[in-house]
Amino acid sequence: MLKKLVKTLGCASPLWVSALVQAAPWVDSQDVYLRADIQALADAGVITVPVNTYPLMWSGIGVDLAKVEPELLNGAQQQAFARVNYYYQKAMGNEGNSRIKATLATDAARFQHFGSDYREKGELTASHEYVGKWFAYKVSATGAMDATDNKALRLDDSYLAVILDNWVVTAGTLPQWWGPGFDSGLIKSNNARPMPSLLVSRYDAHAFETPWLSWIGPWTLTAGFSLADDERAVEDTLLWNFRGTLRPLRQLEIGFSWTTQMCGKDQECSLSSFWDSISGGTECADGSDTCDAALNTKIGNQMAGFDMRYADDWFGVPVGLYLERTCEDSSGPSPWELADCAMLYGADTRFNFSQQQYKLFLEYTDTMVYCGSDPNAFNCFYEHSTYLSGSRYYRRSLGSTYDSDAKVYVLGLIGQYTDSRGMQAYLRYARLNDDGKNRVNGWVPLPKKEKLLMLELSYRWGMLDGMVTVGGTASRSQYIENDRDTDASLFGSYEYRF
Image (cartoon, rainbow, N blue to C red; front, side):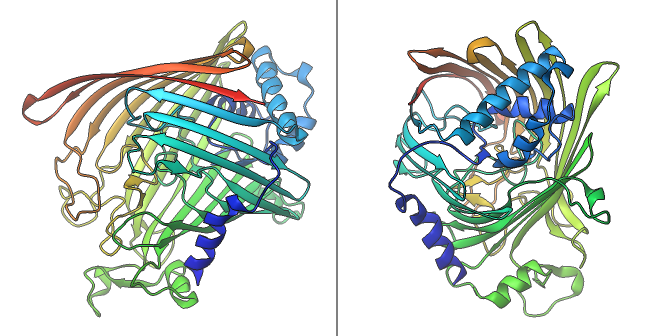
Protein backbone atom coordinates (compact mmCIF):
# COMPACT_ATOMS: atom_id res chain seq x y z
CA MET A 1 0.00 0.00 0.00
CA LEU A 2 2.79 2.44 0.91
CA LYS A 3 4.77 1.90 -2.27
CA LYS A 4 1.67 2.18 -4.50
CA LEU A 5 0.83 5.57 -3.01
CA VAL A 6 4.35 6.92 -3.54
CA LYS A 7 4.54 5.54 -7.07
CA THR A 8 1.20 7.02 -8.07
CA LEU A 9 1.81 10.49 -6.62
CA GLY A 10 5.53 10.74 -7.33
CA CYS A 11 5.49 9.57 -10.93
CA ALA A 12 2.15 10.92 -12.10
CA SER A 13 2.28 14.38 -10.57
CA PRO A 14 4.01 15.99 -13.60
CA LEU A 15 0.97 14.99 -15.71
CA TRP A 16 -1.63 16.68 -13.51
CA VAL A 17 -0.99 20.24 -14.68
CA SER A 18 -1.66 22.10 -17.89
CA ALA A 19 -0.99 25.82 -17.28
CA LEU A 20 2.65 26.77 -17.84
CA VAL A 21 4.22 29.68 -15.94
CA GLN A 22 7.20 30.05 -13.62
CA ALA A 23 7.98 30.64 -9.94
CA ALA A 24 8.97 28.47 -6.96
CA PRO A 25 8.15 28.35 -3.23
CA TRP A 26 11.70 27.27 -2.39
CA VAL A 27 15.36 27.52 -3.32
CA ASP A 28 16.45 24.36 -5.11
CA SER A 29 19.88 22.70 -5.10
CA GLN A 30 20.90 23.85 -8.60
CA ASP A 31 22.29 27.37 -7.98
CA VAL A 32 25.52 27.39 -5.97
CA TYR A 33 25.87 31.17 -6.36
CA LEU A 34 22.51 31.82 -4.71
CA ARG A 35 23.40 29.37 -1.95
CA ALA A 36 26.69 31.17 -1.31
CA ASP A 37 24.78 34.46 -0.90
CA ILE A 38 22.18 32.89 1.40
CA GLN A 39 24.93 31.34 3.53
CA ALA A 40 26.72 34.70 3.76
CA LEU A 41 23.56 36.41 5.00
CA ALA A 42 22.85 33.57 7.44
CA ASP A 43 26.39 33.76 8.84
CA ALA A 44 25.91 37.51 9.35
CA GLY A 45 22.59 36.98 11.15
CA VAL A 46 20.55 38.69 8.42
CA ILE A 47 18.79 35.40 7.66
CA THR A 48 17.81 33.70 10.92
CA VAL A 49 16.23 30.44 9.69
CA PRO A 50 18.26 27.23 9.11
CA VAL A 51 19.71 27.09 5.59
CA ASN A 52 21.36 23.66 5.27
CA THR A 53 18.38 21.67 3.96
CA TYR A 54 17.41 21.92 0.29
CA PRO A 55 14.82 22.54 -1.03
CA LEU A 56 14.99 25.59 1.25
CA MET A 57 11.66 27.37 1.74
CA TRP A 58 11.48 31.01 0.64
CA SER A 59 8.83 31.83 3.24
CA GLY A 60 11.12 32.16 6.27
CA ILE A 61 13.83 33.88 4.22
CA GLY A 62 11.30 36.39 2.92
CA VAL A 63 10.24 37.35 6.45
CA ASP A 64 13.90 37.97 7.38
CA LEU A 65 14.62 39.97 4.22
CA ALA A 66 11.67 42.27 4.93
CA LYS A 67 13.25 43.28 8.25
CA VAL A 68 16.62 44.26 6.77
CA GLU A 69 17.89 47.83 6.67
CA PRO A 70 20.44 47.54 3.84
CA GLU A 71 22.33 50.69 4.89
CA LEU A 72 23.38 48.88 8.08
CA LEU A 73 25.12 46.13 6.08
CA ASN A 74 28.67 46.30 4.76
CA GLY A 75 29.31 46.49 1.02
CA ALA A 76 29.62 42.74 0.35
CA GLN A 77 26.54 41.98 2.46
CA GLN A 78 24.53 44.63 0.62
CA GLN A 79 25.36 43.01 -2.70
CA ALA A 80 24.46 39.53 -1.39
CA PHE A 81 21.22 40.94 0.04
CA ALA A 82 20.35 42.58 -3.29
CA ARG A 83 20.86 39.33 -5.21
CA VAL A 84 18.93 37.15 -2.74
CA ASN A 85 16.10 39.69 -2.52
CA TYR A 86 15.93 39.82 -6.33
CA TYR A 87 15.52 36.04 -6.58
CA TYR A 88 12.96 36.06 -3.76
CA GLN A 89 10.85 38.73 -5.44
CA LYS A 90 11.12 36.91 -8.74
CA ALA A 91 10.04 33.62 -7.16
CA MET A 92 7.06 35.20 -5.44
CA GLY A 93 6.17 37.51 -8.33
CA ASN A 94 4.63 34.83 -10.55
CA GLU A 95 6.11 36.37 -13.71
CA GLY A 96 5.24 33.46 -15.95
CA ASN A 97 8.74 32.71 -17.21
CA SER A 98 9.80 29.38 -18.68
CA ARG A 99 13.23 27.85 -19.18
CA ILE A 100 15.17 26.01 -21.87
CA LYS A 101 18.71 24.79 -21.26
CA ALA A 102 21.03 22.94 -23.64
CA THR A 103 24.36 21.37 -22.63
CA LEU A 104 27.07 19.58 -24.60
CA ALA A 105 30.17 17.93 -23.13
CA THR A 106 32.99 15.71 -24.30
CA ASP A 107 32.27 13.32 -21.41
CA ALA A 108 29.62 12.75 -18.77
CA ALA A 109 30.40 14.50 -15.49
CA ARG A 110 32.26 12.15 -13.17
CA PHE A 111 31.38 13.94 -9.91
CA GLN A 112 28.41 16.03 -8.81
CA HIS A 113 28.63 18.92 -6.34
CA PHE A 114 26.03 21.43 -5.18
CA GLY A 115 24.88 23.28 -8.30
CA SER A 116 26.75 21.08 -10.78
CA ASP A 117 26.50 22.43 -14.32
CA TYR A 118 25.67 19.17 -16.11
CA ARG A 119 25.36 15.40 -15.73
CA GLU A 120 25.42 13.69 -19.16
CA LYS A 121 27.34 14.29 -22.42
CA GLY A 122 24.33 16.03 -23.92
CA GLU A 123 21.19 17.38 -22.26
CA LEU A 124 18.22 19.43 -23.41
CA THR A 125 15.82 20.57 -20.68
CA ALA A 126 12.54 22.46 -20.96
CA SER A 127 10.54 23.46 -17.87
CA HIS A 128 7.69 25.65 -16.65
CA GLU A 129 6.70 26.37 -13.07
CA TYR A 130 4.14 28.31 -11.07
CA VAL A 131 3.49 29.27 -7.47
CA GLY A 132 0.15 30.48 -6.17
CA LYS A 133 -1.21 31.22 -2.75
CA TRP A 134 -1.96 27.60 -1.90
CA PHE A 135 -0.19 25.46 -4.49
CA ALA A 136 2.80 25.31 -6.83
CA TYR A 137 3.92 23.06 -9.64
CA LYS A 138 6.68 22.52 -12.14
CA VAL A 139 6.80 20.48 -15.32
CA SER A 140 10.34 19.65 -16.42
CA ALA A 141 11.50 17.26 -19.14
CA THR A 142 15.10 16.43 -20.05
CA GLY A 143 16.42 14.55 -23.04
CA ALA A 144 19.83 12.98 -22.33
CA MET A 145 22.34 11.87 -24.97
CA ASP A 146 24.39 8.73 -24.23
CA ALA A 147 22.83 8.58 -20.76
CA THR A 148 24.95 6.64 -18.28
CA ASP A 149 21.81 5.00 -16.85
CA ASN A 150 20.22 4.44 -20.30
CA LYS A 151 17.32 6.78 -19.46
CA ALA A 152 17.13 9.16 -22.40
CA LEU A 153 13.93 10.92 -21.23
CA ARG A 154 13.67 12.20 -17.67
CA LEU A 155 11.06 14.10 -15.66
CA ASP A 156 13.53 15.08 -12.93
CA ASP A 157 12.67 18.23 -10.96
CA SER A 158 8.93 17.99 -11.73
CA TYR A 159 6.51 18.36 -8.84
CA LEU A 160 3.13 19.40 -7.50
CA ALA A 161 3.08 21.11 -4.09
CA VAL A 162 0.14 22.11 -1.90
CA ILE A 163 0.53 24.59 0.97
CA LEU A 164 -1.61 23.68 4.00
CA ASP A 165 -1.30 26.25 6.78
CA ASN A 166 2.43 26.10 7.66
CA TRP A 167 3.13 22.83 5.84
CA VAL A 168 3.91 21.96 2.24
CA VAL A 169 2.95 18.57 0.77
CA THR A 170 5.03 17.80 -2.31
CA ALA A 171 4.77 14.97 -4.84
CA GLY A 172 7.31 14.61 -7.61
CA THR A 173 10.99 14.15 -8.42
CA LEU A 174 12.59 16.96 -6.45
CA PRO A 175 16.39 16.97 -5.79
CA GLN A 176 17.34 17.10 -2.10
CA TRP A 177 20.56 18.18 -0.41
CA TRP A 178 20.98 17.62 3.34
CA GLY A 179 23.91 19.11 5.19
CA PRO A 180 26.42 21.97 5.17
CA GLY A 181 28.80 20.56 2.55
CA PHE A 182 29.27 22.37 -0.76
CA ASP A 183 31.19 19.65 -2.61
CA SER A 184 29.39 16.58 -1.27
CA GLY A 185 27.05 15.20 1.37
CA LEU A 186 26.92 11.87 3.16
CA ILE A 187 23.20 11.03 3.20
CA LYS A 188 21.44 13.20 0.57
CA SER A 189 23.15 15.11 -2.25
CA ASN A 190 22.89 15.75 -6.00
CA ASN A 191 25.03 12.70 -6.79
CA ALA A 192 22.12 10.47 -7.79
CA ARG A 193 19.16 11.59 -9.85
CA PRO A 194 16.13 12.51 -7.69
CA MET A 195 13.71 9.73 -6.73
CA PRO A 196 9.90 10.02 -7.04
CA SER A 197 8.83 11.22 -3.59
CA LEU A 198 5.90 12.22 -1.41
CA LEU A 199 7.14 14.67 1.24
CA VAL A 200 5.80 16.98 3.95
CA SER A 201 7.89 20.01 4.95
CA ARG A 202 7.50 22.92 7.34
CA TYR A 203 6.85 26.09 5.33
CA ASP A 204 7.97 28.96 7.60
CA ALA A 205 10.90 27.91 9.79
CA HIS A 206 10.67 30.63 12.42
CA ALA A 207 10.72 29.67 16.10
CA PHE A 208 7.85 28.72 18.37
CA GLU A 209 6.33 31.68 20.17
CA THR A 210 5.74 29.75 23.40
CA PRO A 211 8.47 30.40 26.03
CA TRP A 212 9.04 26.72 26.79
CA LEU A 213 9.87 25.86 23.16
CA SER A 214 11.21 29.12 21.73
CA TRP A 215 14.71 28.32 23.03
CA ILE A 216 15.35 25.87 20.16
CA GLY A 217 15.18 28.78 17.75
CA PRO A 218 14.01 28.58 14.13
CA TRP A 219 13.53 24.99 12.95
CA THR A 220 12.66 22.96 9.88
CA LEU A 221 11.29 19.48 9.35
CA THR A 222 10.89 17.30 6.26
CA ALA A 223 9.55 13.74 6.20
CA GLY A 224 8.08 11.34 3.67
CA PHE A 225 8.68 8.46 1.28
CA SER A 226 10.68 8.01 -1.92
CA LEU A 227 10.37 5.16 -4.40
CA ALA A 228 13.40 3.40 -5.91
CA ASP A 229 11.84 2.54 -9.27
CA ASP A 230 15.14 1.67 -10.97
CA GLU A 231 16.47 -1.79 -11.80
CA ARG A 232 17.82 -3.13 -8.50
CA ALA A 233 18.20 -6.25 -6.37
CA VAL A 234 14.91 -5.57 -4.53
CA GLU A 235 12.60 -3.77 -6.92
CA ASP A 236 10.29 -0.94 -5.82
CA THR A 237 12.10 -0.38 -2.53
CA LEU A 238 10.71 2.46 -0.43
CA LEU A 239 12.94 5.00 1.29
CA TRP A 240 11.70 6.70 4.46
CA ASN A 241 13.16 10.22 4.74
CA PHE A 242 13.41 12.39 7.85
CA ARG A 243 15.36 15.63 8.20
CA GLY A 244 15.14 18.22 10.95
CA THR A 245 17.25 21.30 11.65
CA LEU A 246 17.29 23.96 14.34
CA ARG A 247 19.21 27.17 15.01
CA PRO A 248 19.39 27.77 18.77
CA LEU A 249 22.10 30.44 18.34
CA ARG A 250 22.77 32.91 15.56
CA GLN A 251 26.16 31.31 14.96
CA LEU A 252 25.07 27.66 15.20
CA GLU A 253 22.89 25.43 13.01
CA ILE A 254 22.32 21.75 13.85
CA GLY A 255 20.75 19.13 11.59
CA PHE A 256 19.51 15.58 12.11
CA SER A 257 19.06 13.16 9.18
CA TRP A 258 17.60 9.69 8.88
CA THR A 259 16.68 7.37 6.00
CA THR A 260 15.43 3.78 6.01
CA GLN A 261 15.00 1.44 3.06
CA MET A 262 12.01 -0.89 3.43
CA CYS A 263 9.36 -2.80 1.50
CA GLY A 264 10.08 -3.85 -2.09
CA LYS A 265 9.49 -7.04 -4.04
CA ASP A 266 9.19 -10.16 -1.83
CA GLN A 267 9.65 -8.03 1.32
CA GLU A 268 7.01 -7.39 3.94
CA CYS A 269 5.36 -4.01 3.40
CA SER A 270 2.69 -3.01 5.89
CA LEU A 271 2.06 -0.42 8.55
CA SER A 272 3.40 -2.82 11.18
CA SER A 273 6.64 -3.42 9.25
CA PHE A 274 6.98 0.34 8.78
CA TRP A 275 6.57 0.82 12.53
CA ASP A 276 9.15 -1.90 13.25
CA SER A 277 11.61 -0.11 10.96
CA ILE A 278 11.25 3.38 12.43
CA SER A 279 10.81 2.34 16.07
CA GLY A 280 14.20 0.64 16.41
CA GLY A 281 13.22 -2.98 15.78
CA THR A 282 16.10 -5.41 15.26
CA GLU A 283 16.84 -8.65 13.43
CA CYS A 284 19.82 -11.00 13.16
CA ALA A 285 22.46 -9.55 10.85
CA ASP A 286 23.14 -12.99 9.30
CA GLY A 287 19.46 -13.66 8.55
CA SER A 288 18.98 -16.24 11.31
CA ASP A 289 15.71 -16.41 13.22
CA THR A 290 17.49 -16.15 16.57
CA CYS A 291 20.92 -14.91 17.60
CA ASP A 292 22.83 -13.22 20.38
CA ALA A 293 21.71 -9.63 20.97
CA ALA A 294 25.19 -8.42 20.06
CA LEU A 295 24.68 -9.78 16.53
CA ASN A 296 21.46 -7.86 15.93
CA THR A 297 21.08 -5.09 13.37
CA LYS A 298 18.27 -2.61 12.80
CA ILE A 299 15.39 -3.71 10.57
CA GLY A 300 15.68 -2.19 7.10
CA ASN A 301 18.67 -0.44 5.59
CA GLN A 302 19.07 2.39 8.09
CA MET A 303 21.29 5.45 7.81
CA ALA A 304 21.28 8.30 10.31
CA GLY A 305 23.46 11.11 11.53
CA PHE A 306 23.85 14.75 12.38
CA ASP A 307 25.58 17.84 11.05
CA MET A 308 26.60 21.19 12.53
CA ARG A 309 27.81 24.51 11.22
CA TYR A 310 29.30 27.28 13.35
CA ALA A 311 30.01 30.69 11.81
CA ASP A 312 31.40 33.91 13.26
CA ASP A 313 33.89 36.68 12.59
CA TRP A 314 37.42 36.05 13.86
CA PHE A 315 39.47 39.25 14.00
CA GLY A 316 37.24 40.73 11.33
CA VAL A 317 37.44 37.69 9.04
CA PRO A 318 34.25 35.64 8.47
CA VAL A 319 34.88 31.97 9.25
CA GLY A 320 32.58 28.95 9.02
CA LEU A 321 33.32 25.50 10.47
CA TYR A 322 31.11 22.51 9.73
CA LEU A 323 30.93 18.75 10.05
CA GLU A 324 28.63 15.89 9.12
CA ARG A 325 28.61 12.45 10.74
CA THR A 326 26.45 9.82 9.03
CA CYS A 327 26.25 6.23 10.22
CA GLU A 328 25.14 2.87 8.85
CA ASP A 329 23.70 1.33 12.01
CA SER A 330 23.04 1.69 15.72
CA SER A 331 24.93 -0.10 18.47
CA GLY A 332 22.06 -0.01 20.95
CA PRO A 333 18.34 0.60 21.40
CA SER A 334 18.68 4.39 21.60
CA PRO A 335 18.65 6.38 18.33
CA TRP A 336 21.77 8.32 19.31
CA GLU A 337 23.87 5.14 19.77
CA LEU A 338 25.14 5.27 16.19
CA ALA A 339 27.84 3.02 14.73
CA ASP A 340 29.83 2.56 11.52
CA CYS A 341 30.09 6.26 10.71
CA ALA A 342 31.50 8.28 7.82
CA MET A 343 32.65 11.86 8.34
CA LEU A 344 32.72 15.13 6.44
CA TYR A 345 34.58 18.21 7.70
CA GLY A 346 34.81 21.68 6.23
CA ALA A 347 35.96 25.25 6.78
CA ASP A 348 35.15 28.31 4.71
CA THR A 349 35.60 32.07 4.54
CA ARG A 350 34.59 34.98 2.31
CA PHE A 351 36.48 37.93 0.90
CA ASN A 352 35.76 40.63 -1.64
CA PHE A 353 37.37 43.21 -3.96
CA SER A 354 35.10 46.08 -4.98
CA GLN A 355 32.37 44.43 -7.09
CA GLN A 356 33.75 40.91 -6.65
CA GLN A 357 32.79 38.48 -3.88
CA TYR A 358 34.42 35.11 -3.26
CA LYS A 359 33.67 32.10 -1.10
CA LEU A 360 36.67 29.86 -0.34
CA PHE A 361 36.24 26.47 1.31
CA LEU A 362 38.22 23.36 2.19
CA GLU A 363 36.25 20.14 2.58
CA TYR A 364 37.29 16.62 3.57
CA THR A 365 35.17 13.48 3.11
CA ASP A 366 35.98 10.10 4.66
CA THR A 367 33.75 7.12 3.79
CA MET A 368 36.37 4.49 4.75
CA VAL A 369 34.09 2.68 7.20
CA TYR A 370 34.44 -0.83 8.62
CA CYS A 371 31.25 -2.32 10.08
CA GLY A 372 32.56 -5.40 11.86
CA SER A 373 35.32 -6.35 14.26
CA ASP A 374 38.05 -6.31 11.58
CA PRO A 375 39.34 -2.73 11.11
CA ASN A 376 40.72 -3.71 7.70
CA ALA A 377 37.42 -5.03 6.29
CA PHE A 378 35.56 -2.23 4.53
CA ASN A 379 32.99 -2.26 1.68
CA CYS A 380 30.04 -1.72 4.01
CA PHE A 381 29.06 1.96 3.81
CA TYR A 382 25.92 2.41 1.66
CA GLU A 383 25.58 -1.42 1.59
CA HIS A 384 23.05 -3.88 3.05
CA SER A 385 22.71 -7.67 3.21
CA THR A 386 19.07 -7.69 1.99
CA TYR A 387 18.89 -4.55 -0.13
CA LEU A 388 21.96 -5.45 -2.16
CA SER A 389 21.81 -2.33 -4.32
CA GLY A 390 22.43 -0.35 -1.14
CA SER A 391 21.60 3.30 -0.55
CA ARG A 392 21.82 4.11 -4.24
CA TYR A 393 19.60 5.07 -7.15
CA TYR A 394 20.58 3.96 -10.64
CA ARG A 395 23.79 2.70 -8.99
CA ARG A 396 24.88 6.13 -7.75
CA SER A 397 24.97 6.68 -4.00
CA LEU A 398 22.30 8.94 -2.54
CA GLY A 399 25.02 10.62 -0.49
CA SER A 400 28.70 11.01 -1.29
CA THR A 401 29.60 11.61 -4.92
CA TYR A 402 32.69 9.48 -4.21
CA ASP A 403 30.67 6.51 -2.88
CA SER A 404 32.22 4.31 -0.17
CA ASP A 405 35.83 3.64 0.86
CA ALA A 406 37.01 7.08 -0.25
CA LYS A 407 39.08 9.85 1.30
CA VAL A 408 38.81 13.15 -0.53
CA TYR A 409 40.14 16.69 -0.03
CA VAL A 410 38.54 19.53 -2.01
CA LEU A 411 39.61 23.17 -2.19
CA GLY A 412 36.78 25.20 -3.70
CA LEU A 413 36.38 28.80 -4.83
CA ILE A 414 33.08 30.43 -5.87
CA GLY A 415 33.29 33.94 -7.33
CA GLN A 416 30.51 36.39 -8.14
CA TYR A 417 30.83 39.54 -10.24
CA THR A 418 28.56 42.18 -11.72
CA ASP A 419 25.95 41.36 -14.39
CA SER A 420 25.40 37.84 -12.97
CA ARG A 421 28.86 36.69 -14.02
CA GLY A 422 30.42 33.98 -11.89
CA MET A 423 33.13 31.35 -11.67
CA GLN A 424 33.69 28.06 -9.88
CA ALA A 425 36.96 26.21 -9.23
CA TYR A 426 37.42 22.86 -7.45
CA LEU A 427 40.78 21.21 -6.83
CA ARG A 428 40.35 17.60 -5.67
CA TYR A 429 42.76 15.07 -4.28
CA ALA A 430 40.97 11.75 -3.86
CA ARG A 431 41.87 8.24 -2.78
CA LEU A 432 39.00 6.23 -4.26
CA ASN A 433 38.21 2.64 -3.26
CA ASP A 434 41.26 2.94 -1.05
CA ASP A 435 41.22 -0.67 0.16
CA GLY A 436 41.31 -1.94 -3.43
CA LYS A 437 38.41 -4.33 -2.89
CA ASN A 438 34.75 -4.43 -3.91
CA ARG A 439 31.57 -6.12 -2.81
CA VAL A 440 30.76 -8.32 -5.81
CA ASN A 441 27.02 -9.04 -5.91
CA GLY A 442 26.05 -7.76 -9.36
CA TRP A 443 24.27 -4.66 -8.04
CA VAL A 444 26.96 -2.23 -6.88
CA PRO A 445 29.71 -0.26 -8.65
CA LEU A 446 33.11 -1.95 -8.98
CA PRO A 447 35.62 0.93 -9.01
CA LYS A 448 39.37 0.49 -9.23
CA LYS A 449 41.69 1.60 -6.46
CA GLU A 450 42.69 5.08 -7.59
CA LYS A 451 44.63 8.15 -6.52
CA LEU A 452 43.15 11.13 -8.33
CA LEU A 453 44.14 14.76 -8.73
CA MET A 454 41.48 16.80 -10.55
CA LEU A 455 40.92 20.46 -11.37
CA GLU A 456 37.39 21.51 -12.32
CA LEU A 457 36.63 25.02 -13.64
CA SER A 458 33.58 26.83 -14.97
CA TYR A 459 32.65 30.40 -15.86
CA ARG A 460 29.28 31.94 -16.71
CA TRP A 461 28.15 35.22 -18.25
CA GLY A 462 25.07 36.73 -19.83
CA MET A 463 24.79 36.57 -23.63
CA LEU A 464 21.96 36.58 -26.21
CA ASP A 465 19.38 37.34 -23.50
CA GLY A 466 20.40 34.16 -21.69
CA MET A 467 23.21 32.63 -19.64
CA VAL A 468 26.25 30.90 -21.13
CA THR A 469 28.47 28.61 -19.05
CA VAL A 470 31.71 26.98 -20.21
CA GLY A 471 34.18 24.86 -18.31
CA GLY A 472 36.00 21.61 -18.03
CA THR A 473 38.20 19.30 -16.00
CA ALA A 474 41.80 18.12 -16.09
CA SER A 475 42.77 15.06 -14.07
CA ARG A 476 45.57 12.60 -13.42
CA SER A 477 44.89 9.14 -12.00
CA GLN A 478 47.25 6.54 -10.60
CA TYR A 479 46.08 2.94 -10.30
CA ILE A 480 47.60 -0.24 -8.89
CA GLU A 481 51.04 -1.20 -10.25
CA ASN A 482 51.76 2.45 -11.22
CA ASP A 483 49.30 2.42 -14.11
CA ARG A 484 48.64 6.11 -14.81
CA ASP A 485 46.09 8.00 -16.86
CA THR A 486 45.68 11.66 -17.78
CA ASP A 487 42.27 12.92 -18.87
CA ALA A 488 40.49 16.16 -19.73
CA SER A 489 36.94 17.19 -20.56
CA LEU A 490 35.10 20.29 -21.81
CA PHE A 491 31.49 21.40 -21.65
CA GLY A 492 29.31 24.33 -22.61
CA SER A 493 25.70 25.26 -21.88
CA TYR A 494 23.16 27.92 -22.81
CA GLU A 495 20.09 28.72 -20.70
CA TYR A 496 17.24 30.97 -21.81
CA ARG A 497 14.35 32.06 -19.60
CA PHE A 498 11.20 33.67 -20.98
